[in-house]
Image (cartoon, rainbow, N blue to C red; front, side):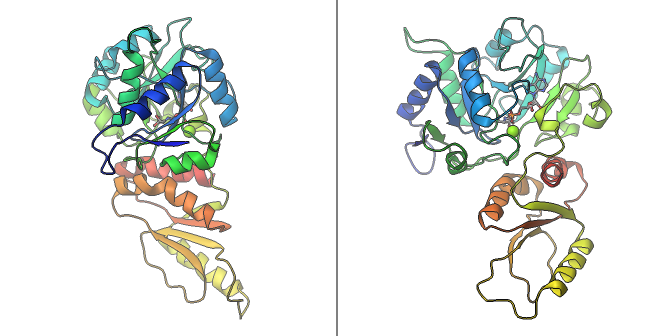
Length: 354
Ligand code: TXA
Ligand code: MG
């Protein structure tokens, strides 16, 4: 069931009863769909093994793929960090100070005996302090409960989608993935739209495990250290679902092409069509591009890719779902610019097309 996180449509006042209901569900060991500024998460008490097991089952995710644990920002996130992390390298503290609450996940050495199921058995744990007000309200309520209620230190929450599929950026997407069984807190369309940047802080030097909205340059500036790229580190990196080749995959086949390749491909497709197409024929191609294209006879679903990388990230997963819902067989995407701002979007598109 979808519960609005806000009392008013303009989103200013948080609906305490809806948040309290979700907090209660999590305390009781249940699952909740929750909004964050990046994507919606499928959340459960990170210290409750049975609840965490339910996340893996619901997602169809292998149990050795670690989940991100979300902590309240009450004390700069440090309470949650102290509960789960064995130690915090200085550069990681600098990153927390610079970007928390916000779309940055830090992988830290894990305290033994804590959060082991959520960590997928890894000796480390991924921690994130999200900035979405509804998520923060929920996390704070769990951390500082009313007298007598159980304290919950962190919420394990992977993206609320079936394993390998497109991440959800609205409450309706979550409903479409998991149905009406659990409460889904509706905090509106996610502002950022792609998952958090993940930095591994367990190897003495920061390593980028997943690019996102917070760029490499911003991270290097905030901690004064060189950030190794995923490629540089891939051979030693822990097995992570976010680094699997094919991920974020729509049902339709996704292809990334330059503007020139796209124009040629459209030309070829057009010339392969029978002379008279029946009028009720459904479009087979969805096109997501910045450049305009000349196509006279192809029926397509078309969306213009925003010129701004942040705007493109914000809408990307919703657009891919929209294309799937239109029933197309092919999604043709113009390759975004190879600049640092576009790194997160390019990464997700490459995975979707792998
Ligand atoms: O933006 C986000 O991070 C979203 C929202 C809901 O917060 N969450 C998310 O979670 O993307 P998920 O489970 O889909 O991504 C988890 C990824 C893993 O695939 C892995 O790459 C990394 O986080 N990760 C988590 N814990 C880790 C650990 N201990 N060691 C290495 N990688 C870890
Ligand atoms: Mg995911």
